[in-house]
Amino acid sequence: MARLAFLGMGVMGAPMAGHLQAAGHQVTVFNRTRAKAEAWVARHGGSCAATPREAASGADLVMACVGNDDDLRSVCLGPDGAFAGMAPGAVFVDHTTVSAAVTRELAQAAQVVGIGYVDAPVSGGQAGAENGQLSVMCGGTQVDFDSAAPVIDAYARICRRMGNVGAGQITKMCNQIAIAGLVQALSESLAFAKKSGLEVEQVVEVISQGAAGSWQMVNRHKTMDQGQFEHGFAVDWMRKDLAICLAAADEVGASLPVTALVDQFYKDVQRMGGGRWDTSSLIARLD
Ligand SMILES: NC(=O)c1ccc[n+]([C@@H]2O[C@H](COP(=O)([O-])OP(=O)(O)OC[C@H]3O[C@@H](n4cnc5c(N)ncnc54)[C@H](OP(=O)(O)O)[C@@H]3O)[C@@H](O)[C@H]2O)c1
Image (tube, rainbow, N blue to C red; front, side):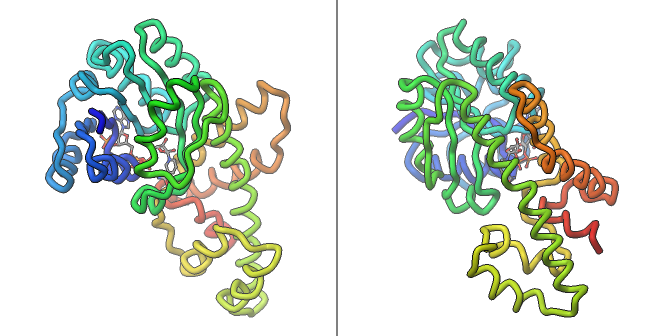
């Protein structure tokens, strides 16, 4: 069993840290809004710290799942940051979805002070975090990955090393690119069914068992039909992710025309007040 720190008690981080504590690890959590960290301790045990540095002190592995590039920098760097508290040989594992650029920057800063770094973004949403069934895509050295993977297993359905630092984030971009166009196509299909006078439920029962079937279709059609968008992965986060994908595509000369278009559709959803709706809310702009 390991001594662990977990930074970020949000929709994803809190249940992930809960699985670590339940697996028997000794977990210290940090959250910017302290009340959430205290609520986590009251529910799961373990302890909470006042700063990332304090949480990370003495930990074998430090996990983080915060918001965006700047949020990650702020929990890693500076006198109260995790890197200042970690001992040489410890490994930092980042589950936040961030750019490959900040990943390279922080991995370099970690290397200077003798800390390992694994970028390990996740897919599977709030339900995947709560059920311990996330897909975890990792980048880092084999040695750092080997230290982190057995611990990550507490909340993973699959945890794979995709290559060196940054490869996990690139894999997560592939995931988001694949989802963006799919959710728009599903929204158009369901809105079309409704306007044509068909029952969405009946249409989905048939087409989900054919070539058009998808996880999104099976798990989201009901709430999309009812205009309920409370599944956790916010439109604001999706726009952050798509901006990361579009910038990375420019760097490698890849073309993402549908991703760019769907990003603009998500901007419409934000304008409708849906920044914290989940990503299946693309259908709302078709009504
Ligand atoms: N939700 C999903 O389904 C999902 C799925 C896959 C990947 N992700 C990714 O996972 C990450 C977290 O998502 P989430 O849904 O868990 O978000 P969330 O519920 O908004 O939680 C974000 C957490 O980060 C903390 N935080 C934000 N900025 C910070 C800062 N500057 N310093 C310290 N702490 C800070 C927040 O603290 P406070 O409590 O103080 O605000 C909160 O604990 C994002 O990168 C997201 O894209 C999410």
